[in-house]
Image (cartoon, rainbow, N blue to C red; front, side):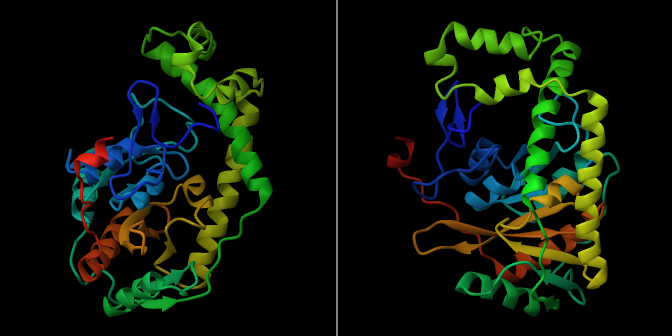
Length: 323
């Protein structure tokens, strides 16, 4: 676990490949997205802390859904941060993502999926419509009956990134140690994992373990971290909900996930859907963001967009892709 490690790398099986082209599969739920887009599985599960479902879904042209934080149990999911981690489905269609979410969410949701799901909705646009793909997104939303409101922006600053990073380092040590103890794992804590990796550095830590060691050195108290996390969550939630309510929006839409750093922090639901392909074949996604706990309405709007736009194309997988 190190900044040098490429997305999708596994110390056990090697580098995960993007089946569309020689490009990153993105992370950290890269394998889940690859399995679905390559037809190895109909449904997979990823875990999002900040972009780990949405980003690989975009990079590999599949549907990724991050439920509202706290609505899905994280039991038996190896944690990064209890404050932000959220399991969610990665699938080829919005309907499959909805059915999967309905099966494992704490309070099953009952959305009405139809082509009418965007009619009368006000959608805030977080991106500049300066490319063919971005223009098609807006056109498809309007054809589906939505009112598009351009020029929306979610403010972010460097302090938000710094605070978030500090919380993750502290949470990882605390939460992982609790997980290992509760599940009676062979490794008793993070320190034991670090020591084990050093026994065979060439095999166990090809890209180092800088993040593990930084987390182990962290001495912040649980109470202080909880307070910092609570403050950051409230700040992120206020910015998002204020943007939605002041403009009377039903959802925000971003191109890929360029402006969505604060969304998983706030805990809002996100639904990424294939939006097209660049000239070199690179997949492009669009991401719906709804009010907190508005998972049903996000599925209804996303399904309508998917049925109108029909953007997804399966990758062409040849023998060369396995090299």
